[in-house]
Structure formats: structure tokens, C-alpha cells
Image (cartoon, rainbow, N blue to C red):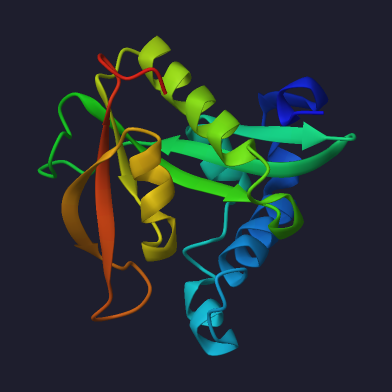
Length: 167
């Protein structure tokens, strides 16, 4: 059975902030990063109730349990596409649910939500390991950005055109 027939997507609840933060760290850890590197990312991967309240955040549930989530966040002034875009602040899937289609479902939902909010582009700062996924989804490479948690590390950027994309 496909994930489309077994899932539900809903707005994240403020009281789920710790659960989502832990999920983000587990998901990031699935790429095989060393523990020290993950610890240096912990603050950046923490989703407080305030973040969930201020920015659209949605979870996908499977069998009544949160299996992944995403957030939409404003683009910093002066950055590319800040005038007509919104940033995919997070997209994380439980490691045992990865490669099941849930990432696609959440990205499609994020794109639809961004369109509904009036944005023309979804800006994505992706993990280097997730670049192929974003490109398969129609996003185009758009340079790099310094990591917010690891000095000297550059992260790939992508733009998903919401006016011409089906995602």
C-alpha cells in the first residue's frame, strides 16, 4: 500500500516541539554524521514552540504517529528570492520511514502551502546528501550558503519554481 493511502498531514502542535526536534536529529543522523557533528547541529535542529507558532509547520502521521515534518520560514532580507519566496526551513522523515515516499508527500504539501500563501518560489537549503532528491522533485541548484552550525561548511541551495512546478 502506498504512503498516500496510509498517511495524514496536519498542522504541527506546539506541544510537539521536543518530539520534532528529536526527530530532526535522528533524521540528520541517518546520513552517518559523527556524534560530535550532530551535537554541533543540535541547536539549529531545535524547533521550539515559538518557531512552530510563528511559521507554518506540518507533520505527516502514519499509524497515528508522527513520521516526518516540514516548516516554512521567511527568507532573510537581501538573500536571493527574498522578495517572492519562502524557505523550506526543515523537512525531516523518521529514518525507518525514509525512501517510502513521505519526503515527496511533504515537499508537495509544502509547495502547495507556499503557493496558497502567495509565494512564487520555494528556497531550499538542503543537506548535501539530499540534493538528488530535491533535483528529482524539480528544484534547481542555486549556489551554496554557509552552515548555521558548522564553520567552513557550505550547504547546497535550491529553488523550486512554484508557478511552473507540479511539486
